[in-house]
Amino acid sequence: MTGIFQRFTGKKKTEPPKTASRYPGDEPTLPLRVEKETTVPLTAGQARPLQFLVGIGHSIGKQRDHNEDALFTYTTNLISNTLTLPFGFYVVADGMGGHKFGEIASAMAVHAMATTVLAALSAPLFDPPTALTPEMLQNIMQGGVQAAHNTILEQAPGGGSTLTAAMVVGDTLALAHIGDSRAYAIYPEGRIRVLTRDHSLVKRLVELGQITSDEAASDPRRNVLYRALGQVEPIEAEILSMPAPASGFLLLCSDGLWGLISDEEIRVIVNAAASPTQACQTLVEAANTAGGPDNITAVLVQFLA
Image (cartoon, rainbow, N blue to C red):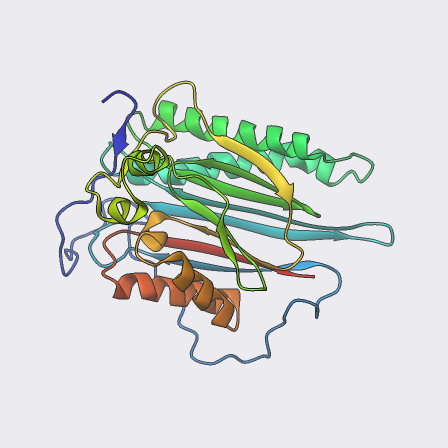
């Protein structure tokens, strides 16, 4: 089927083979276990000025022998007598292992996206008179997606990757998304909302009313994507902007997490954790406990306003 791409899930294994890594960085990377909180965590309303706390989780899972997920986080602040500008940029990519260089494609996507976006922002971000409008941020994100796509085409032909990126500049949130990694907003009053739309065959069938959401969860075609980096030209990513949450959380994650844990379980774990780092660790552990058939990646941003 033209324009349809599928991840390779491989045969299930209870233990990954103990062989030398094929590529640098293939070794499993597990989140640091936090045995005891050494400080009382900050909560929304306690931090002035607005700040972001960031945690990450990254695991090879239980049934894979290499990791095709990649992530990037960058957080800084510009504060002076006349300016308070918190800034964050976060990316999650999931390589498509059914194609050549799937694990390399995700790393290239993250690198190209990050370098392109940060380079484009370096002048306006550090020049306060320049107004960074939502339209400008969307254009910058679109340029990053195109650069990631072109890099895969040139350096890893046949490879593919999802990409979900979030940029927070002051009170504006810009998102760039292609594939089936996700961005969630988790609100302090207890709601959770998916901010992105899965570019998967089963999601499209649900939207058309041909199958139910429950059927989609176990459908053998659930790993089939109709949009991904490094594949069909022209690239069609979703780029959007919205007000940044005044408080609560932003979660970026690969399908190795959300495919194993329900949205409600994600919400409960995030709200119960003492910190974003602990929340990401618990999310990864929950996905692995549920079988961990895929790589697992989570980036959690807490807004302290």
